[in-house]
Each structure stands twice: as structure tokens, then as C-alpha cells.
Length: 260
Image (cartoon, rainbow, N blue to C red):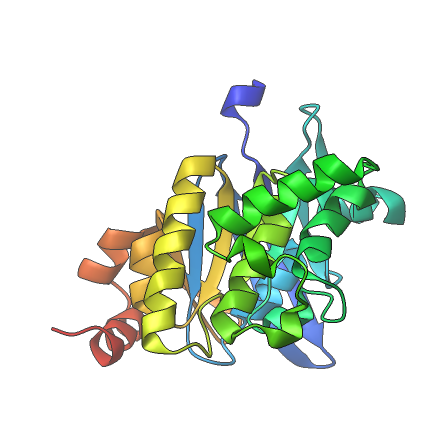
């Protein structure tokens, strides 16, 4: 298989347990460059556990996650050294938390939050780092005159946009998002969704988005997986799954959340 034909990420039989309780089990799929995959389901369905397994934040009880590196080599994440894993997370990957405080340094400035990721990969030119921070704050609609303010003075929506800028400054090829619009007011959610939709499309990056909101999945994703009790019960193109769900659980989920 040539590089052009190879998936960016391949999950095979991904399984994780919390003691005797199943977190996720036997999840298998391929993610392709530029593709956005939504993982949906009710609270406790296993979707966040799966996301953390895919992002190498949780160890696997069974299965594997393989990622195609920038040099074209596909690596099993379990075989990476800690240094290789950290570099991957600082360069090729981004992770957007539901609570932006989990993905930001709350005691340093907005500009430093963005610039810190560049410094982590070796950039030491202050002027260039600040210029990149200004550029990305503008892209995520944070006023540039707030560059020296710390995130504690920001609203929830502004913090989330800052977290997105911090992740995107190194041009990652894959973004993990855990309920990126959760906990925000409806009007703020709509603005953030428009921003995410535009950025994902413009940058051509792949993304895996965990959400309980099917409207978020419809707007942002190409493909969808529906989870229940730690397992994938249905998957397919997003519009097909939402407009013509085949599994009884998916039918109930769609009927309970989306308007008829």
C-alpha cells in the first residue's frame, strides 16, 4: 500500500477496562487524512475512553493503534518511547478538552500559551513566536490586544478558542476533541462551531470528535460511529446514520435528540 493509500490512523480491536468494568471494547476503524470522524453516544457509552486510548492517554488491554508519521512510516503507538510520544503530541497532534482549563496554562498570558507549544519544538526566536501568536489569536477571533492577558480573565468561549489556537499553531495533522462545545451557552456554541468548521476545512486536517450533540456531529463530521456500553453499534457516513439509522439504539438516540 502506498503512502497516499494508507490511513492516517488505524485502530484494531481497541479495548480498555476500568477494573472489571468495560471502558471500550473491540473498536476497529481507519481514519484517513483530512477526514473528520464523530464518536457519539450517551454519557457512559465509552466515547471519551476510546478517544483517550486513541490519543495514547490510556493503555490498551487489547488491540492496537497505529499512526502514519510524517516520514511515511506507520508506527504502533505502544512501541513509541516517551520522548517520541511527547513530540507527537506537541507537533502532529492536538487535543481540545471540554474544559479549556485542562488544556491551557491558566497563569501565563494568552500569547505565551500559544507560543509555548512552538518553544516546545525548539523555536527560540521571540519575535517570530509572538508574530505566530498574534496570527493565531486573530484566526480564532480573540482580540489581539488581549495577547498579554492571562486566560483567567477570559470568558469560557474565549478560553476554548485560545485552547484551539494553542493546538493549531504547530499545524497538526490530527486533532482530538472531547465535547469541544460542551458547557457553553447556545450562542457561544454556534460561533465556536462555525469557527471549528472553517478551520478544519481550511487546514485539511483529520479530527476525531467526541460529542453527545448530534447537531455538532452533522455539522463537523464526514463519518460517525455510535457507541453503547463501550462498543460501536453503528457506523457510516454521518448523513446516512442520522437520516436512516439502522440499529434500534441509534434510532432511539436520533429520535430523542434531533427534531423530526
